[in-house]
Image (cartoon, rainbow, N blue to C red; front, top):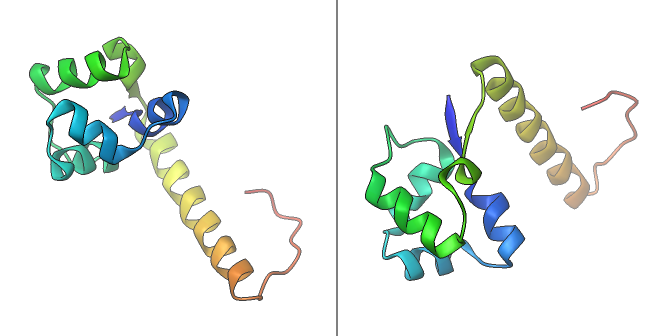
Length: 99
């Protein structure tokens, strides 16, 4: 599966998702779908706009992740969210399990 690394590039530039939408003229919905892996594809015009604004190459924006690794990352992210939720609710406990 090919993923868009937009969050990492925005962070490196000190910019926000909304800034990217404004600068590229790409709708928030389109960018959100790309970011979340919900898009079925990306056209060259969209890719070019993102690369121009972020001053990067397409290879900086796109990365290939095999399905097994992608599922593992999603599982880890869900576990991290649950842990943060427990911390904010005061229900945190120590665990020796690796995430």
